[in-house]
Image 1 (tube, rainbow, N blue to C red):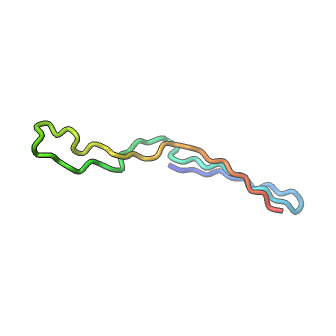
Image 2 (cartoon, rainbow, N blue to C red; image 1 turned 90 degrees about the vertical axis):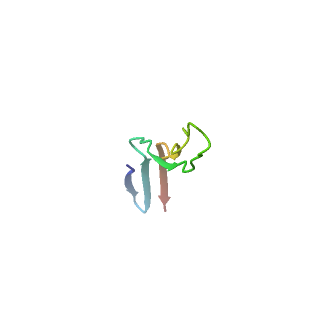
Image 3 (tube, rainbow, N blue to C red; image 1 turned 45 degrees about the horizontal axis):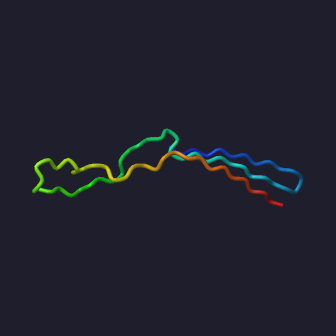
Length: 68
């Protein structure tokens, strides 16, 4: 879940846009890539379908834009 909060503040002819972006809010760790190779020569192929990548961790971005 990604969320964005923002506010516009006006001062005469100036305008300030502020915002906060939150990415991966609930910090899910779902796998997005798997090891698809299977080695028949190995008795215990424990690496088959092991996750190789997961969803990026949560982070926040704060931004301010001033228009005049």
